[in-house]
Image: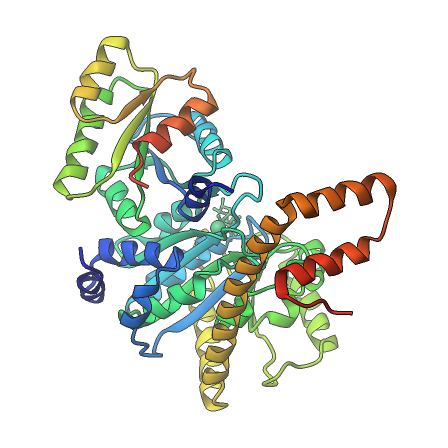
Length: 138
Length: 314
Ligand SMILES: Nc1nc2c(ncn2[C@@H]2O[C@H](COP(=O)(O)OP(=O)(O)O)[C@@H](O)[C@H]2O)c(=O)[nH]1
Ligand SMILES: [Mg+2]
């Protein structure tokens, strides 16, 4: 076993997965949860109807490395930056990843706003896990 | 933040500091040990039962009510995937939905290679939470199949949750849950069959030899979705706690926790040594040859034992 493998086994990346606001279903979020688990991550699954406050509270208690937000409505341009700001205001060292159907021009806007990565609906499980690992502080 | 500052902040109630310290505990960081000064005050309540019976829902209700008496922490433990080492920890959803405004600290933990439903770090986490001032620690673990039930060794009071229907009662019996229960909960009592299940449990309790402190597990019916029966459950837990106290069994429970922690941590070390040894060229070649040509498997076991421990058990 290489040193790196030992490290990830001892310190799995911890991801809080949630959906902000009132919209929709969490099918996509569940798929991502499984991909992350199969990639060796520990997923703290919050599901639907979360607020930035409830997510921050969970991140603190769970000492998570990453917040994964699923977005399928048009709210991503306000909600995702709001999450990034809440993380910064709380002084937390946590990356925000957004998944969902995000129009190309908006992707850049989100990245500029401090979102660590944007994952489209076609993202493969390898991509999802690789991105989680690359943005995590562990 | 410096680790002793972190302990101070955690004692003052900082969720973030507690969260970070629990990560250190999970990593088995040694410098934390010297900073944990046990109060031996925290009451540890374990809830176990098959997936879906309502453990998280009940835990949430218990936590919300017990938070009126003191500081409450919840540890929700779920198995890590043996294949990837990852885990999906989904207990917070149910708990959050019943906690309301109650101030409860919740941490989800994966078992990370430990067997028996409890993470190797769990007992150390209990020690930390006790030391930084929590009065009650509620631990949710999945109790399935024939898996040994570690939670019973780790908790002061073990609550086994079943649902109406023969299957569950039988299963609880098979899984060894009957022996470890200090209190039984029949949750989903809104469904038909609760009284049959109660009768089955009573019968099985009649047949089971009484355990060390001659306590017969009371049976409480609850409805997680409406919080019915929760006060009665708290009453049963309190009663068991009083019995422990009266019979001076708290020290014994603490010893059982220490034993469990030491055993499971050493177990992890031994296991990883074993895995490494199995991958060495020498052993790997012998496995190949035994598999291909037949040969003395037990001699190979002896050789491996010798390699690991410096002696083999004849
Ligand atoms: N009908 C009914 N459903 C319940 C009751 N308690 C919990 N549930 C539901 O059972 C499901 C599983 O509950 P959960 O607490 O997550 O179970 P756990 O897997 O044992 O932690 C959820 O959908 C709950 O809403 C109950 O008393 N009656
Ligand atoms: Mg649960």
